Image (cartoon, rainbow, N blue to C red):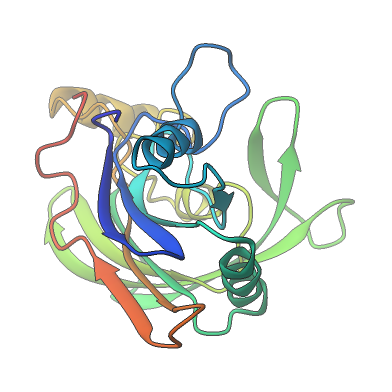
Length: 227
């Protein structure tokens, strides 16, 4: 299996993986490895069914925890939890360049996605196609000129965390798309190749047992692969 994928939990219904930066969850590009194709090959090698359902996603340069369903029943249950925000929690850790206005707070913006450039931007509430984006954050560490944040999403918009933090004047370190020139220079000086955004905690209700499954990455970016 691709070294950028690490299985941290598996049973008959699902697989929880640690996705390292640089690999796509799913791609249409011929010859490019992605998590879905790699995990399907793994399931076949283990003598099982190649069925695998994507429940949620992460951007290719982003690290973090992902759950995939191995049965249609599990896929329906997990997807419902995600859609209804019922028992499915994703917590993110981010290192930003700059200083947030408060030690803890929330950000509310309206975002518009540009499908041609695969980017999003902050827009007015009245602009056609704009969707409300809301998150809460807490500063958990400081190391001038950066801060480390714990982030919870209320909504799930395209590139939401990256766009909102950049708009707030604190772009994520290593974000080549939404970072300022100063932030990009800092990342280059520090030898940082990938964006410092990680889905560091995942919690959901198991679709079969009903038990709460929780996994976390206490030290994201340690030993980055493909650095």
